[in-house]
Image 1 (tube, rainbow, N blue to C red):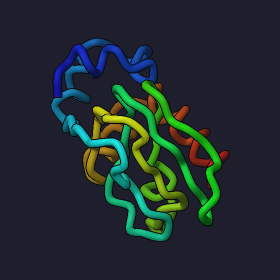
Image 2 (image 1 turned 180 degrees about the horizontal axis):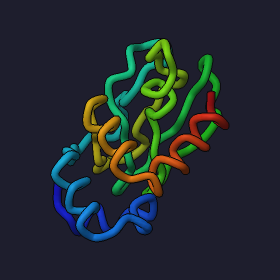
Image 3 (image 1 turned 45 degrees about the vertical axis):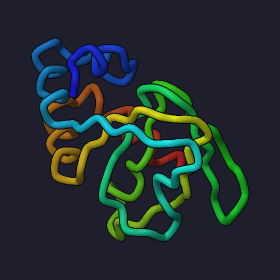
Length: 128
C-alpha cells in the first residue's frame, strides 16, 4: 500500500513515520464498486478495513445502523472477539478504496502500534 494513503488516515496520525511505513507494508489497498458487500453479519471475520475513499452503510439484523466515510474503520469486532464472527453487514454505497489487513497483519499492527490499538479496542467495545 502507498505510504501517502496511510498518512492520510487519521487513525494513523499518532503513529511515528517509520511505523506508518510498516503499516503500509502490512496492508493491501483494495478497490470495490458501489453495491459490493464487504462483510456479512454472522460470517467469518478475516480482515480489518479502513476507508480511504468512498462510503458504505452498516446493517445489523437487516436494519441500517450506521454509515462509513473516509477515515472510518470496521471489522475489528470479529477479529478481537473469541468467536471471530462478523457482527454487521457492510455494503459500499459508492466506489471505495480500502486499506485491508488480514487477521495476522491486524494482530501485528495491534502489537506494534499501541496508539492505534487503543482506539480500535474502544470502538470494538462500543460496537460489540
